[in-house]
Length: 335
Image (cartoon, rainbow, N blue to C red; front, side, top):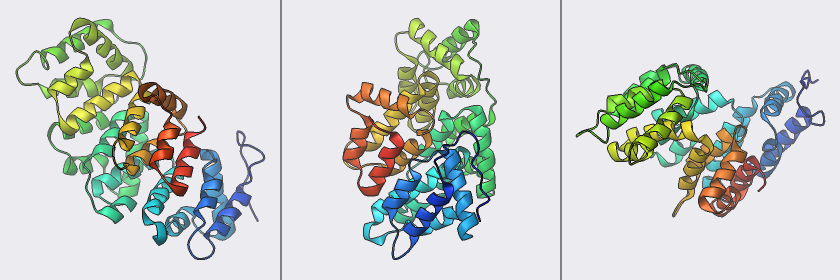
């Protein structure tokens, strides 16, 4: 018999036992009724998903995540199955577990996408996750990383990243930054001058200045630095970073800067790039939709429409297929 109680804040019409039973029926037989899995899990919020996991274990004496991982494999539609499986497994995790999983799979080249392709795609996901998260989020995800991979995040960054990119990532995960919206105007202008002096106004960029300022300052402070830089010099700080740095190091700096100024706009740009041109980068599309769905997705959708003249829903609908498309659209929400 169920021993699961519904806490305050959860819709009283929601029945975790009924959802658990629906999922179990979806697993019966050859293959998996992935449409039913999507119908059950996509509308549920984090509290509800946790209750479903608890109830499934209570009723069927089996771990729901393990069952989903095993049954969401459909050889008749391997690509779509891998995309959907990865998305649903991320959806069922806590935010810090998602970040740890995304970064760990990339640093260690494991996980469902690597099972299929065995391709190493650089450290784009690692850079995005680390450089877009707040200090408390980073601390939680570092703990989850250590628990999941039995290693310290810093050690794996050290073994996989290179040069200035490595120094930036290590500085960013190890620096405790304030989150206050208050800033020191004198320090803001001092930082703007230092970035110009050691960047655009110097023969050969001093990357240490960029690493120190971008890793040590709060988002509110860095946003003010960008405004001051724009007032004081011909180009924006974003253009200066693009012109003075390159590769993964440039991407890390830009992620930090853009998330200091407008995080939803940053993620809208990442989503657009994941679907731009021929082919879709499903790993990036999945990562951003799943990790932002319960945080700032309405604002991301607004920025996407302003930037690209069409809705995010339209883009996802035209670039994805099947239950994977249905799942993503459910997380994004209606236009």
